[in-house]
Image (cartoon, rainbow, N blue to C red; front, side, top):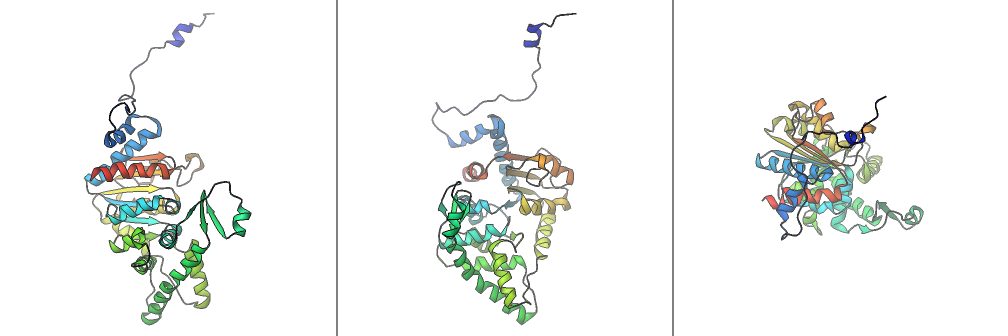
Length: 331
């Protein structure tokens, strides 16, 4: 029997498959922010995906694509809220989709901030103190009590209009009224909900009846059973916009309804032209968040090109990098 040749196994001949050298940023040179971000694409692992995401967002902007920006509520729970406000205030995105928490937490923060906590805090103790925990962020229940007082006049106004005209307000109108209501109040210019209203950027909240807003609607309907909100208009608005745009881009943080709401609308156009996903979802579980770009292409939600990327990682770290590189430094 022929003996194995260890040398042959160790030094197996190879071919040069791949492209471009793996190389990181050289910190020995004078620091240059633009070159620092450009170096991500050659670093490897998720850094290379961040580099590709930066490039795709730059292309969206160069080609004047309409950017559909979707995000889950935890984006607003943390300090990414200020980043979202920057994009809305400067009209750098053109369509917004979030969840109920993404609306109410933005408005609450104009009243008072959320506070530093920790992931290991005792839940029973916090409940006794009236403090809600989102990860390592504490939200005193006082914020929700204030928010109910803020929201109630808006609901009452819509109800009076419904009684007067017989027309039912839709969910998009409801969110617009919240943005209008906050104008002039404390710290209102820090609110992306306000800037979406001010800059006439469509802001969809799906599903509207979730979270504290759902609580408020429930309590109001107990007093006024005939009160209604039309949830069908939001579908018409996003589908019409998706169908009409000449060039499209999507930046989506997390999974859930915002991601699906945007991507599903583009079935009408054989997919979004440029897509950037940021999430920690695992493909093996078959979830919406975990799905990789190839799955979206199979549905016709994303264009069948190389112009899509998923950055696997936590958005509070990744998203500021993308905005700094693809928006702030690319003015």
